[in-house]
Length: 77
Image (cartoon, rainbow, N blue to C red; front, top):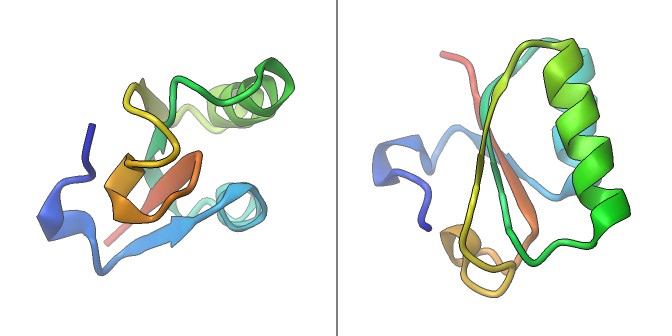
């Protein structure tokens, strides 16, 4: 799984950045690596559900958007 190249400039990478941006209603979509541990996935999925943000699960943390991160959030325009 790779984040759409058109979204690459407007994104945040990593759990802390994604959760912070979600709290501020700045995220439109989240990409979550399928090899993330269960507690990590739970935090992301719960926060996304609360904010009604779509989450796409797939790929690995080594290859997600070439960032070597388990989660990438796409910022709203």
